[in-house]
Amino acid sequence: MRRAFTLIEIVMVIAVAGILAVGTFKALSALFIRSSKARAVTELSLVSQSALDQLGAVLYARVPGSVIGYDPSDGSFDAIGRLTSPKPVLEWIGTAEESLKRRDYSGFVDMNASDSASGVLVSPESDGTRVDAATRLKFDTLTDVFAADRVRLVFAGSYDLGAEEDASVSAFGWHGGAAEKIYDISMDGSGAITLNASPPYIYEKYYLADSAYAVARAKDVNLSAACVTALGVPLSEGALLLFYDYRPWKGETFCADSGGTAAGSVTLLAEDVSGFRAERVDRTIRLSIDMVRPIRGSTPVHISKQKVVF
Image (cartoon, rainbow, N blue to C red):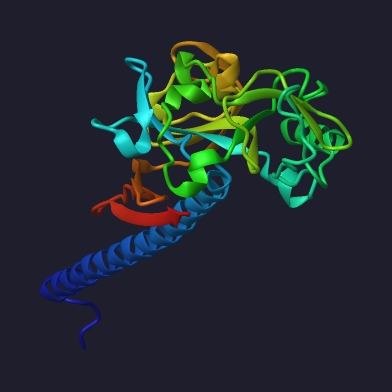
């Protein structure tokens, strides 16, 4: 009667077990890779959509004609519709959209009640005190926003007629520009707007500009800037950053620019961004974002999304 396995039987059992183990390992590895890819696709899809939605909301409240492409390496810039070479930074002037939605100001001038000779305009259903309070809260400042030149006025003029880029973009003060078409003002509680300059034309519609914005990948800006290091997180070249709370009409530039009077703050929109593009199509801005995340043991996951901002 046999009481033990033969050597051949033992070898066969070990061989079969090894084959089963290798097959199981490969199956589990493939399952792990598929799971990692599915998780990465879901995360990148959510992050890219969130980043585009945030940018779209801020860009929607832009001053028409103020959107530019800028290259920090040589200081060159131009309107987004006239670019002849790629620029790594997208910038624009934002309006006091929150105050407009709260009806702190109407955005219109009563031409009959206004006195262009003295530079005093009447804006019905407007309250400069409320605009001041809302802007202080928005940018966390205690300073009177009109006295500190933190809010300026831009007349709609030809912008609403479709000619968004009739005037030079330097008229907004970009990177040393003259800022001759964005007017220093004060507004009292009755809606009376005092112009501290004499514009050649006065229009019925106006925008209140309260900040400039810039978006760029980390590889294209100064990562040693205090505002960036204050984020407290290590940034890869693929980090997408949004800069705000700076005013070109005061000679300021975004806080991680390599030249000029840096000011304002920054927030992190997304990581793993391999490409970000913006282009003007008719009167809309088309944003595109590409995101790539490496997957161990497999090819990277790639996501591309677009958003049109009217």
